[in-house]
Image (cartoon, rainbow, N blue to C red; front, side, top):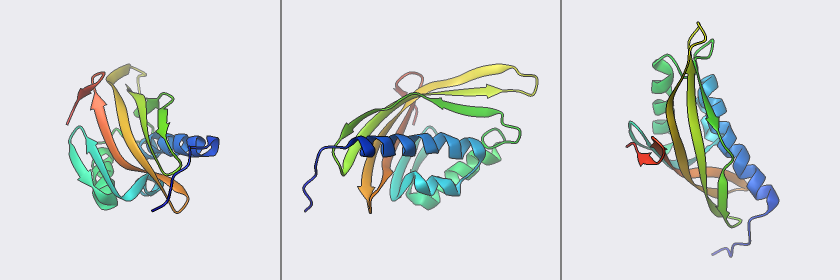
Length: 145
């Protein structure tokens, strides 16, 4: 068993980069880019169910894109995420991040349909940080599963 060491500044920056990649991939419709975010055996507990493994997470993302707002061109929805609170060591950590979803129409009408948070457990495998488990909470902390 590997003995873990404290999380380095580089580890924190790498975790922040992984967390920032998630909304960028969803908003641009880059489903395969989510492989840089989630571990192969990750679990995503989202508002519309629980999804285990990359294939299921990719299918979930494709369903969002098929709905017409996520990944649309021109964009009609963006995820705006705050800075995460990260705690852990050099091999495993947790992160909590506030998120706001902003939608806008071609007429430039803006709405905020969701204010929530992500609660993540990340692991470092083969030198790369990935989300092992993500719980999405909506409505300022109310679990929306």
